[in-house]
Image (cartoon, rainbow, N blue to C red):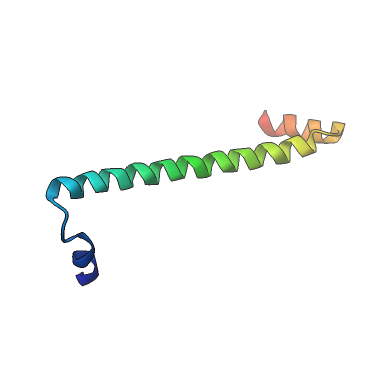
Length: 64
């Protein structure tokens, strides 16, 4: 509690609410970036498996 007070003691209510809104937006953006990175990794793996015909068949079955 003391640590939080010492960190935010100079903020007004408007500043605190704006800071909270920015932190929420930042959290959402970080989540979007993480999801995009997972999608990129999945595409790389899929791209590596598409090299041969068996990999293509497996990929088509996966997306059916």
